Length: 70
Image 1 (cartoon, rainbow, N blue to C red):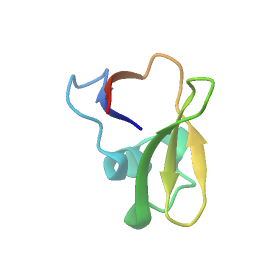
Image 2 (image 1 turned 90 degrees about the vertical axis):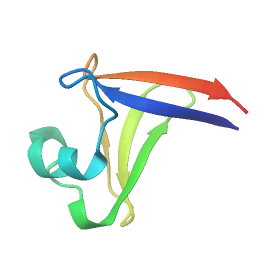
Image 3 (image 1 turned 135 degrees about the vertical axis):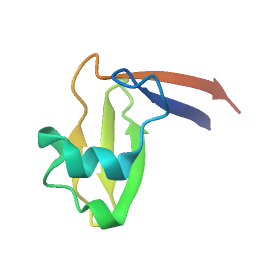
Image 4 (image 1 turned 45 degrees about the vertical axis):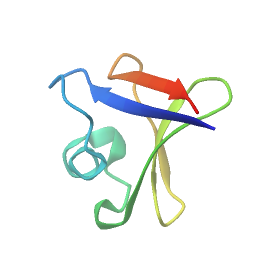
């Protein structure tokens, strides 16, 4: 299993899925009060998920992934 942190390149801090769902147009269709988290697809694409089954592809260059294998 791989664990990773997602860094917001605009703030330099760990990305907050709720804030992103509220503030970002590309994630506006996600249910902000039921956010799940980020996920990596097998090809390395980063997506943001809510608990209702909705997802959004994160824009290229918007986030940095810091991770480690466990």
